[in-house]
Image (cartoon, rainbow, N blue to C red; front, side, top):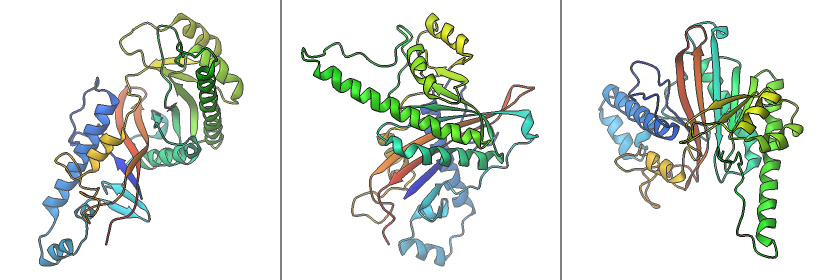
Length: 324
C-alpha cells in the first residue's frame, strides 16, 4: 500500500505548526506532518457523532484512522483533507519552486514514476499546470566546500587496488542513474510541466562530467555550505562560464529516515496510529514501512517576495493492507 503524507499549506494562519524560517527541512517536515495529522484527528473528533452505530463499527475492526484519512485503491492519503484552494492571484504572479528528494536505498529505476507522482501532487495542490523550477537532490552526493569534491576518495586502498576498483564501479553506476533520471526530467520539461531544472550538491568536477550528457543544462546548482560561508572559487568560475545560478540551502540529506517514518506513523505517543502495534495486531497496517521520496514546494508572489504557499508531500510504501 502507498501512503501519501501531506503537511498542507504551512503559511496559512490557522496551520498548527509554528513556522521558523531557520528550521532545517527535516525538522520542519516531521513537525509539520505530525501537527497536520493531529489537527485532522482533532477536527474529526470534534465533529464526529458518538452514536451506537459508529461505536459498533469501530469495535468490529474498522481502523480508527479511517475517520481522518482517505483511501483510494491501494493509496492512503494522510490526512484526508482535499487538495488546497490553489493560488489567490493569476499564475503569472508567482515563482513556484519545487525540490524533490530521492531517498537513500530506493532503486534508481523507480525515479521516473516517483518524479511524476511528486510533481502531479504539487500541481494538484496549487491548481496549476506547471512549475518554474524543479531542483532534484540525489542520495549519496555531498558537497565539500573545502575541496569542491562530492565523491569521497578512498585513501585506504589495498596494494592490489581492489577497493578502489569497487568504489569506481559503484560511482559509475550512480552517475549512470543520475544521467538516466535527468532524461526523465528533460522529458517533463519538454511537455511544459517544468520551466527550468536544477541540481543539488554538484561541485565543478561533477558538473563538468555531467553537462555533456544533458540536452537541457541545469539552470541552478543548490549547495549546502553547512558551517562554511565561502563558495569555492572553482565552482563560482565554472558556474559563471556555464550560466548556472548558485543557490544555498540548509536541507538535510536524509530528510525522512525509516526509523523516523515508523515513529511518525506508528502506535506510540508521537505516532498517528497508522501502522499496526504488533505483527499479529489488527489495529493498523501490517508490514515494514519504506519512505520513497519527499517533495517540498514553495509559491512566492514575485512583486512582493511573499511566500503564499509552502508545504511538503512524502510517499511511503508499506507491506500489506489492514487485516480484516
